[in-house]
Image 1 (tube, rainbow, N blue to C red):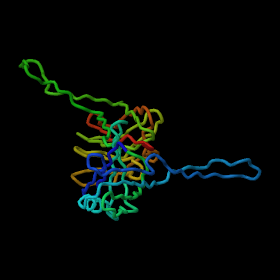
Image 2: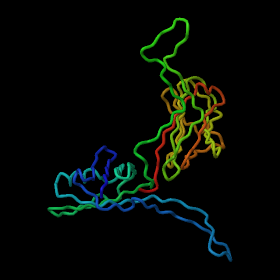
Image 3: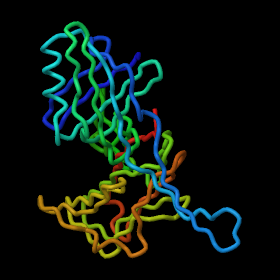
Image 4: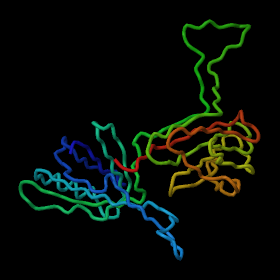
Length: 287
């Protein structure tokens, strides 16, 4: 296969499967597929059934490969793909322009053959979150600073001049170019007192709103809407404080839909003293 797969465990140990290293993968099962559980209900006399729900299951991915026997390669594979040690699997296909990763834990560590010339191996990973995330995350800053100072420069003693200028984009758009909706991490930073920060998804009117929260100077409000990892907390004087009680009743940990997502951030007071940036990862159902 004309691809590169890099296995990195939680201890920082890595092994690369590629033409360059001579450790080749010949088969990957579960690379593109997902299992979906479908539930339905049927009433008396009904023809067929009514769909009542769907859920995407975790996935298992099995890797099979081989290499020309070398005891150091065998040892490296066995010492990297370890029982109970979580790992990130990076999948790179230069021809297709793909560079994505999955996270999981081994359910079968490498089963190695003992051929003295060519040795084969197989191992399986369990991935609780079954979708592939782009290795290069996306980033959007609603507030930035534009340089106004450069050489040569003529200074005036009568007119004001600026080193930089604040650029305030209250309405910005994130384009989700993946195949599924995605979560994100939003970080509000207060440069002065700010009351009731919020982030609005313009099209659906879903909102992350904290009406009862007053942010002080240098406070940070961090919110994650990433599936299986939702949270919100306030960082004040180096301490993390649970901000969920300050979240409005009708607020939601909304996702970014496939395509354009216009977002607007606001505050009940002190908007000029509020900054916001968002981090996200484009995600694919299969590769």
